[in-house]
Amino acid sequence: MTGVRNSLFLLLFCGSALAAQPWKPDDGPSEAEIDAALGRSPPTPSGMPSTPSITPSGLAIPVVGIPMARLTDTFSASRGGGARRHNAIDIMAPRGTPVVAAADGVVERLHASRGLGGITAYVRSVDGAWTYYYAHLDGYAPGLQQGQRIRRGDPIGFVGSTGNASATAPHLHFAISRMGPADRWWQGTPVNPYPLLAGRMASR
Ligand SMILES: [Zn+2]
Image 1: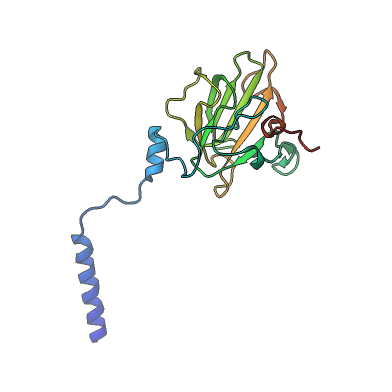
Image 2 (image 1 turned 180 degrees about the vertical axis):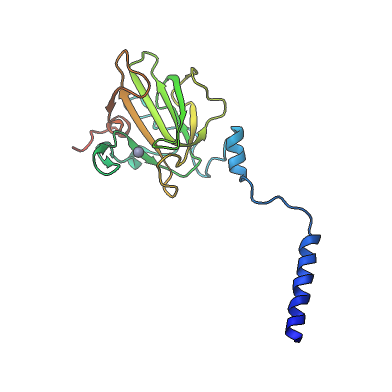
């Protein structure tokens, strides 16, 4: 009987104690999510240099702080059950690492989908002959807009895992396409970025 009364007392006491607590917001969006929504940049992971590596091909490695030696050639890997070829390389890096333009160009299309690429950017070279594709971004660099002229090394966004990337393995999916004069942003012929970025021929 005493036990029951004690439990009742505890229940009432704790109930009133909870009620007396000042109002606190419940689990809303995290600070990072709010920052992303407002277009503010998340902090750069510590120890990361702030300038990209320029490779002998003249392209910048589009993830800041990643040296050539850390790149792997996954261009010909199969995706989505075997039939589909990757046609890109995946550059692994911590979430929030800055993604920068591999080359000069014009931001042709900023496209966000729940599907394959997630938050993506298509940048076409000024002569129209090449498209550089950046996918699985955590978000765009503040102020990035379609039609904007950008230079090699300019901010595109941040490494993430949007689209069909694994949440536990954030990376930049980076592709290069050779564009015909009539090709739209999603078209073109895939070219392996690996030898261009890693400074050596791809293993075949
Ligand atoms: Zn990929």
